[in-house]
Length: 511
Image 1 (cartoon, rainbow, N blue to C red):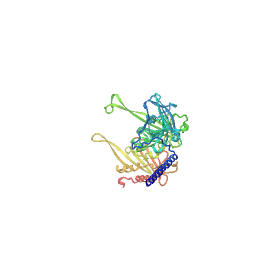
Image 2 (image 1 turned 90 degrees about the horizontal axis):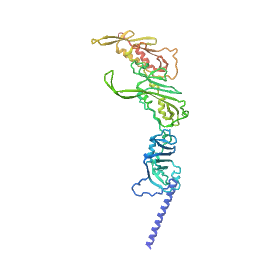
Image 3 (image 1 turned 45 degrees about the vertical axis):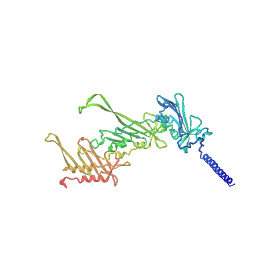
């Protein structure tokens, strides 16, 4: 009797466990349905060993003659012609060959991580009633291999897919789906602008339709170089009508801005309506003049006329130019651009274009107002509050015992001989005068009397005199008048110090 009761208890316990399992299964099935996850009907691998991939197809990619690619922003059929992939419907459109090769690498073989559903009732459950992406390769013999990508299987880090349209749902690795992300635009080849060596640039001219222009030119004979040493071969011609020397220490960074033109994407490879992009009447034009060097081996060696040494190679320079038109900005802020001679429309980042269109022109100037080499100066005249001052360097030439010519210099201030050190000390103070800032408005000098005027007379060229006058402006600055349009200010304290140094400059016997 006791044994019979014990069996009844065990049976009741088993029935309770079975009931719990049934309730759990029903709950889990309902939860899966609510989460939108399709129920997997494949057998699970219960062993500890990882499941083996299922090979569904492989092809010899060298035999592919046609490739159909479909994604959210593209539906393109590529065909191979003379070893180049072209678009079947637009053979003239340049195609990004590298991106096509990436697609081919995704279909050289197709492996599934596992079979999900062998006979699905509703493809929509897997996002495959209208697939998210398609890749189909057709070989020269007509054989095809394809796969369609559906929803991402969140728990399994892959994508549901149909392979060769066999009706079965497979789980493919994430790379099969993430690789099909090229947009229509990204499949268009982006033409490369010329690679310009910054050090070879010799002319930059930026024309802005609605703001100031910018132009700099390399000129070894720069007439505006006030150093008389060739120290400043670069001249800025715009935005200032008169030429100004460029600060050569800032050239490297500046020229680098105009050496690289990185196009982001090709928007229209052959635009018939440039006005759509603001390129019929461009907002700006960027011109870069440069040269390219090439070295050639001579068929017959020559002799260097200067040294007599044998020359086996010669280097030649070929002048080049590049012009870019800048149009409107698209919604992300990038500019539409096109190269001269082409109707292809590209985009370039705003940061790149803005740097080229609007450099800080004042910051690029050689700040020294006049800085002539003292070896080229014959005399200096100055006027402070109407009082004249004259400094002079007299040079006499004689021959030494070896028969070599020597130049002796004698320094004078207001007719009195002074020491070389004292003279050069005052001279250094005078040539240190700098432009401090740029005027923001038009000014008139009518009725103003200069506080200080300095003129340097260059003996190497009797026609050259460099003059600068400093006129009252406000408590902090003087206007600088060099005979050009008045555009700049000088620090009042510095100019007052220069005037003081000139007034206190005396001959030894006067001290």
